[in-house]
Length: 259
Image (cartoon, rainbow, N blue to C red; front, side, top):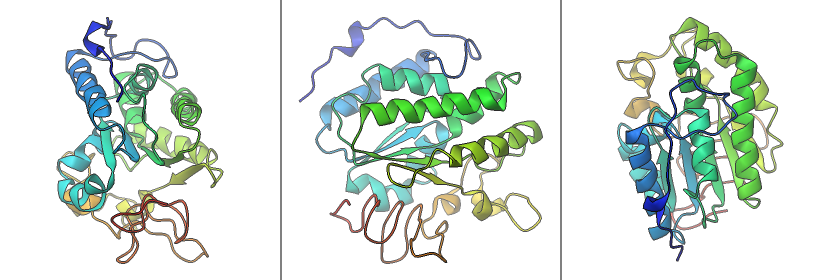
């Protein structure tokens, strides 16, 4: 079992927007406490964790607004939630580099794009290429740290902020190019979260028009068919795969089997 005295580490919290998105930085007091909690979770459940969900509130709220889905599909099947609301790209990088995930051997890592959204919110002057570079750095760090794991990138979801929404569309185009469909995969939820007129489907979002509702997290919503492979976010009624074909690149195919 990994043993770390995490409380003896000195942190210097940065102001939101300081530095470049691809440079790692810790967050505020709340963030530090969450980092302690998640590092402790890693130490205590190191051998049990087979899948990591990492990001900001979009990941964290899987266990809040999407709790029913999380409990039924992921939490009881070796998945661990490393989401921290308000997390920026720099914050995620810092967590990866500073022992939060040390000792884990995940088969699958799910990376949400919420930290990219928060980075743009905290610093409206940051460019889409800079945010993209930061998100690329997260993937690079994870691939270097967990060479045997499959990394799944979930693209930016639709936002009501016009400026950020336009930048996010540009970023998604480039994020998709990171996928080699062997070790790194990309999922775009936008077509399933918007109606034919290009607006958010209300029942899939909370009142803030940003975070997903339980219905938005519900399984069987985001499957792509029409090709030999089935690329699912949550799964079909009989296959609980996170990504891939029926035979490979899955988070799990049954409650007790990872592939």
